[in-house]
Length: 294
Image 1: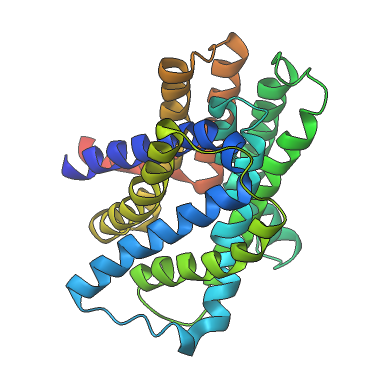
Image 2: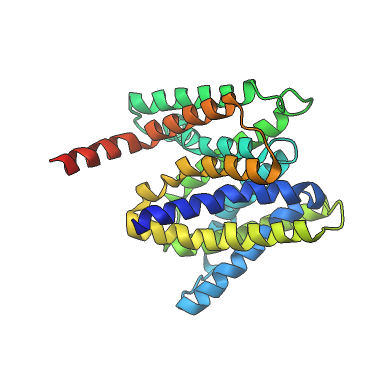
């Protein structure tokens, strides 16, 4: 029960990240916003590491952390921050769920990983979901909206690439991967703020959104996620992917007055069914149900 509550809480936090980005991205610009996000998240994890007496050894693994930070945080975070300036936060949160599909494509085409038919079927469902989501949404019909959609999909491609990279990365605790990744991202993003400076003086709403995004949605969320990995295992913890769009849509509707259309619901369902097939979660749930019945 505690694990389930933890998953719901984590999904609510990560779903809220798209709300916070929507509130702050236009005023701060993608680079400044994400620089604050990763630094606040990194500082939060540094405090926890100090309390737990965990050494990061950043300079020993600096190349690894810079690569991981670039693909796992810096690039996708900035692309999402760019996308939410045009798209609804709820739509971007759903597009975020397509990362597992890119993972399959990279694994099959680049790494030659054997892929089951159900996984390709899941990719089909996911693609249909994205088409349903963006093909009938009024926001997409606006001039220039397709580029932000492409940016969001490229962000999830970057996530998938980072996931495959970590399988061949130096061995260390998951906490250190998360901690070093954020410092690496902060270094990578820093030069971009000179080319994409702050556009407007931030008000209290923007400042609050930045603090929430950095400390809660990045630092605290990582701590909670790795706690769930320890308690439930990595596969079960990754099922949070299913719940993030639910909260992304909910927060967008409640706080930004974003409309929930039939295409939003249908597209979300198709994407989540696809994620279930790709990750094999449907088989795990079926097996668990059989074990309980026996």
